Length: 381
Image: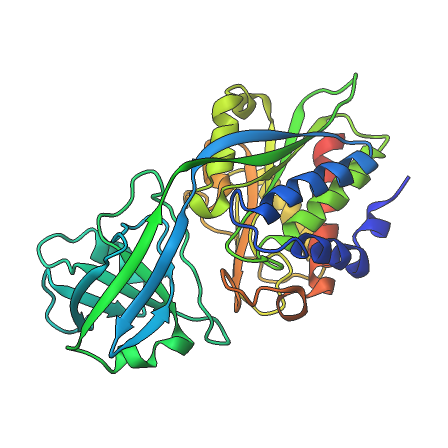
């Protein structure tokens, strides 16, 4: 039997992260996302965990062209997945900054993504389009999740990397064109469901982590995936286990947690059947962590996980207020007994979220050991 001490090592977990990242860009329904499904099912099977895929339909953004044209130059970008399309002709307007005067003929240039929902939902002085400038630690693009994929905004929004945007910031008042030519046909993606059954089991614990994201997602998704696979291997051989365990690897994360929402829709009794939900969210073990937070409304879970993290040397553990609704997949089970961890890092939602830049393998292993102690308590109780 493999103990969690043997499985939660930096080398083992980092190797799993590298395998996951090697598939490519993990956007929902893309080739790498489907290859990850096959890989996860295979790894779970090696450890004696029965696993299968769960298919769901979703609006898949297919982009033909996405650029801003000004002064005869084209600056490539990415459409906001829950924004509007301009069609192949695009839209023209005068470039304006947030401090300037906006009108229906303006193309707003902004670099504060937090203000975007306010701009998109404002009608009296709304521009005709928005150019959102974003950048990670290297100036490369950082994409925004599509929380309204089923109810898109009426305005077209193009996301542009900061390192490519100097011309736009210096061109206030000039006429420019935004071209966002894309469609949202219905396509199919898959979740992965692994189950550890036991004839004598008394209760069910769910461990869930997303498997999709904007790019290769080494830190955003890799830490949670590697730890969950190691937990599956460990719990499969745990003789003291008295609970069934369900392992969920869900797609659709970047489009409003679409995969988990569909899985819960297709399994309506699961929310009530599970006595505890453990959510391994974003940026677990990031090398350049900028922020992390824990969520739970359950005093016992908070105390157990605090103790487990403290034993790994974590101080000042950042618990959110009990009544603060979490973001990510755990918001789907907010009214149930759950514990969740999420975070951000310098390369979050960008192309530089790769193992060599974004992952601290020792930190991933520390979190992995903390989760192993927590799950041991939950499945043996």
